[in-house]
Length: 115
Length: 114
Image (tube, rainbow over all chains, first blue to last red; front, side):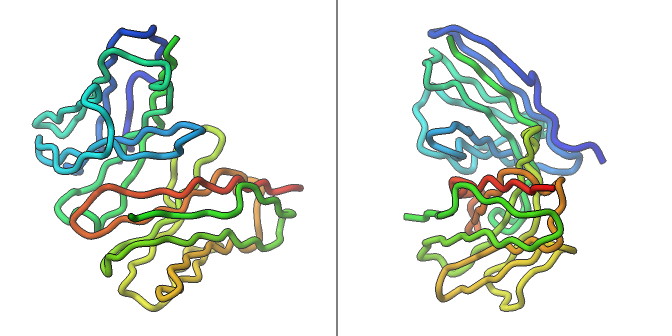
């Protein structure tokens, strides 16, 4: 089975721009969670989608948004980029039916650099 | 607040020896799962081991085992017969039922020396 894939792997943007990151979950998984990883704040939960609906949301500003498609692929969008948005963005997938009781499998991440 | 604390930012161990990574957590929930994830320098986060909080028996996966003390809210990872490929950042994490918001510790950077 193919693992979680994320595209692109690396991205450079300038302040004020917007960016869209993509995540394809493991086949059969319907839940996709997004995390931001920075040296200062560590790993922080952004949001989770299950069956095209946002089920959980972390403590991030509204500039961070996401969506999920009917094939369970998910995208996250960050608008009006700030320098502090530079991070590794990880997505993780799970079956999703039993939130909080399933292992999440992570993708390789998208490294975003904001200049 | 639900938090995870890893008090050892860095550790090192000689190849073939045993090392224990510490983790404590705080939650008022009774139903949750605990995980150790490994993130090698290539950045792919890999599940090492998981523990259901309702199970008293400590989980083991080959050379990896945990010491789960629910009352003390402690969840340490023991790596036996350390190998060079074990060099990585190790994250302790937990998740509560009905919520996919996984909480992570700050991580422990483990170096296995030849």
